[in-house]
Length: 206
Image (tube, rainbow, N blue to C red; front, side, top):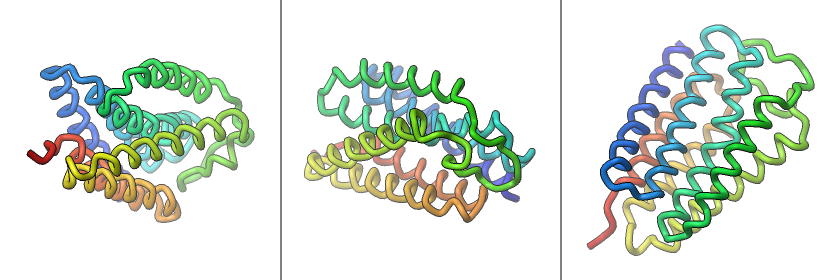
């Protein structure tokens, strides 16, 4: 059941990421590109969750889960929000950060082998420097940027920004309640993806 729910969350996130890519291809706005990448990373993290739930956790699904869920999703979400308000310099920073995150997640040695059936805790397998520190920075700055822009533009987009607030909150709760296992985390992931997508595509108030 855990693997089935995680797979369903993966399909939901992939479908919404694909719809954002379609909208980006039609409009070519940079925020849609960043948000597409954010939801795409979220979908890959859900896929890694499915992998771990179905076959047991090992190094490969753990690295993929931590890279896409722990390092990229929130950072790219915040980059999209800043791009939406005209901060074009963020695109170069986001690309640099993404390359750094991929490199570190791929080569950082594990302090302990990954095994078992529960979602592995990062502190049990990764050193604080550089991987966990980078994740803390990316998540914190990305979340602050997303919520800050949503708050500043709340009057123009009350519904859309409200959905973004809700999506960020649901994603954070799902991460905090990792003890619920793959199934519980997957349900929160799917709900957060739907809320964030709604926030991205809801038009501003006329």
